[in-house]
Image 1 (tube, rainbow, N blue to C red):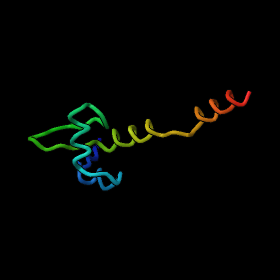
Image 2: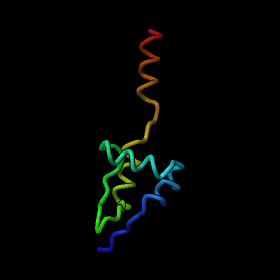
Image 3: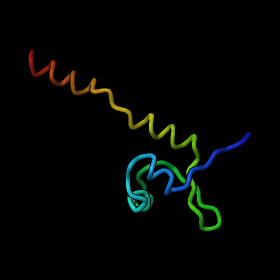
Image 4: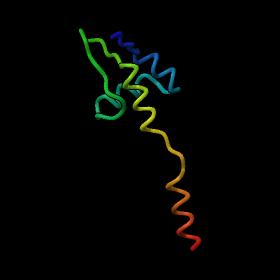
Length: 71
């Protein structure tokens, strides 16, 4: 089984955020899981994809609230 890993700078570019944001998230327990080996931070591709899916919003909750308000 081959795992693919992403560096914080690559992930920051992928998401259009500053690498410092990822560092701050790690400090407060926010963001995707990460691994640290020999002082080097890495993110597993699988964890990144799962995190992105979990962050997906389709607006359904907002539509339900609007429908209740209109009733």
